[in-house]
Length: 193
Image 1 (cartoon, rainbow, N blue to C red):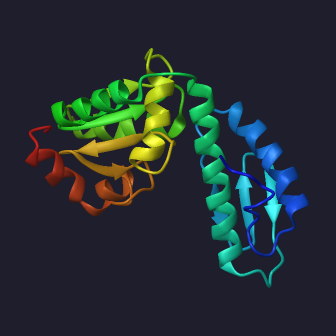
Image 2 (image 1 turned 90 degrees about the horizontal axis):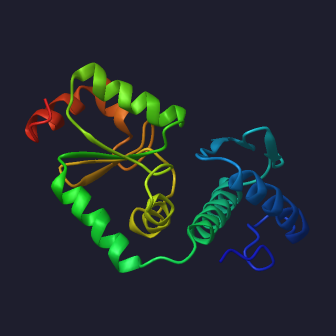
């Protein structure tokens, strides 16, 4: 669990981090999808702004983002309650193995809607697991925190490879793959087009 008393990023006082952490965790608890946008000196989460001085190093921002990500993971795991982790991991792995294109999503998430639109516009065949309506949704999201290091959705796999979300991730996300022309080839390779 994230402890603001011991994990305050360099350059921020523990009191500031503790206060911010409580506010951010309250905000995270109320949102189905959270995407943090980082610009030099400013981290924005919804309507909350955390500013750092212009002389702050980028390591302060990275430290704060890691701190917030750890808190988000802990919150998601807490909200999932008790579940059989092995069974959920088996289900996730089975879904990835059985579906050439797989997306974990929330029904009302704007980034999920955008990712689905990209695939629909291409005429792609894909499988969606809506975590906000699936009985195991909270547990799946909690296990994704350990599996891919994030809890945000959409979380998209093509041919068993995690490509990221709508606009981010290890391969840049679905939109970037589409804009670069790579997505079409990936989808054709797995028979999704």
